[in-house]
Length: 199
Image (cartoon, rainbow, N blue to C red; front, side, top):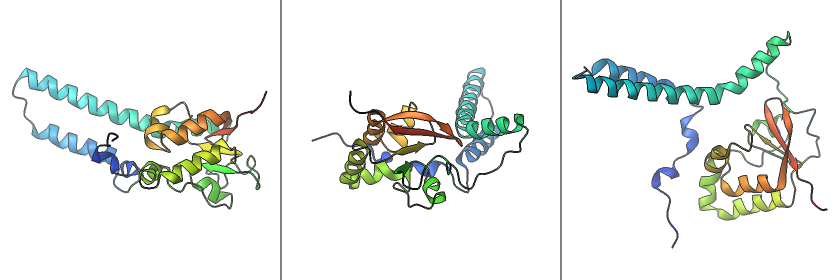
């Protein structure tokens, strides 16, 4: 019998982000309140508290950098070009044709192009796959058959921790790696096209 996953992995990873109550902000408030209540007993507890606070700040800073960096880079580029950064209601409209097969990590991309998303919630794909493994296998088989002309990702595929553990999961991430090649970046997204097959 195979090893079972810890029960904590059954939770929706998407519960960490994109909600009214931002857990990063809440973490800072809780740590700050805790720090204000704790009276240092000795030099040792002061050092431990300082190390703990720095670790929390480092984690929050790294998370913010990961989440905000693409948007900040886009705003800086737009500003340096003399334009004001604006929201594009139809991203990738000039790149992806109406007849192109499309798999997007961000479901807004196909919706903005007038299509139905193949994957509605990439956060939940692994959890759904545990209940319905055939769904994941079918999607991977479609990728191996090069049914998608474009795969649109929010981060580069080399960001293995994200695509193997958070979005899509190992099987889908591996199908993208083996069947598709990086084709460039546009409108803040990483585009992958089918890899050349044959001699």
